[in-house]
Image (cartoon, rainbow over the protein chains, first blue to last red):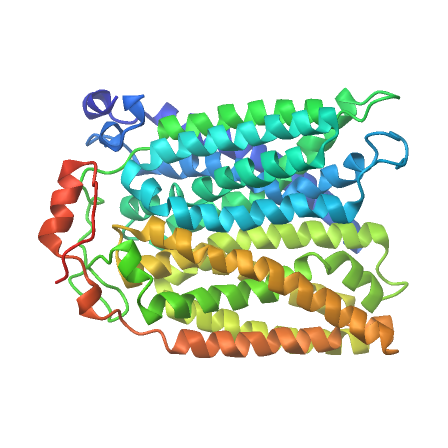
Length: 42
Length: 466
């Protein structure tokens, strides 16, 4: 695996995929929490 | 299983360091579920009665121990396994954390199925707690090595995930229970099994993505400072030697006091806001307030840790202590004048600093003890969290109860607690003030350290002293 890394490096799509993998569920959770949080000001 | 070895995780020259924060987030977003475990409390009290608690059902105080055991084990497993995590590499640690976390859920599902609370204490509390501890520290030193120019920001990103895990876990748990529940069944066991499986896959992805930099790697254009500051060392301290330094214990108290002040109000935020502002803050609004606090807890982890890269770790903690003192002293005044907005603002900033305290401390340790064993040292420091988890809620709950039984109105019952929290931060300020550079006699010998790194396995014994 380390040898493969040495040859290819990181592609842009890998970066996008990795960040989307963690970013999408986190963003959805944050939006849901914000919606609930707005009830404080209603 | 050699692919888990440290030597198999060394990155090549083209590997982007920006792949490592998502890998760390894969772990922290999952183990952050612990903050949302309370969504299971009510359903777990109705396993027999289904619509309401029946004789033989568990009660809330019994169930509260599940979270307490998990957090306690988190601290002590991080301490005990810290050196193993550091020397075995991040992939082996992340893989182990994933196994423990998932198996913890599966055992708990079995405990729900046979209705035995001790099985859940063992599963989620002990096994899952080990997953929490190992997972929490697993990416810390790796991130610091990848981001020597921004160690605060890097670890802040990962530890932000721990704060954010509840945002995903809470709606996911509720949704899964709604899918598995029937008129005769609550659906908690099935939810535990599915969540264990999802978390295992998610965490394994992180374990496969993670890499450690080659020993000679450094960011493009980055020149390591020879001695940038008296409080930023270029030497390393062995984990068990770090425990002998006053600096470690001063930072331990700084974290413990900062967390005690924050954790005490987190659990009581909903009740406190309603009791201090009766008629103004409804139950729904209080729930929204708790949600906003979670967001600031998460955001504070990233923001304060990133700020610490610019103003320094010690100064960041000075800000926490001074600003926290002012805000805790202001809270009773906001209650007196009936300012809900002021109350909310005070607590949102306080809670951001609570999260910031967690996120900034790995970089503080790196500054004091070097990068070599920072993960293991961080593991020992996490025991401060375990202790604060006991001190904080006890302080808030018992003082409030004492005041109420002595005739203090509910709206004023928290005032003494706020002043005590402010007092704790004064002690924290003094501890932080006393932190000086680590004595040279604790530094590892550079030649031995580099030999360990190049060997790639670091079966380190007691290091020779400089």
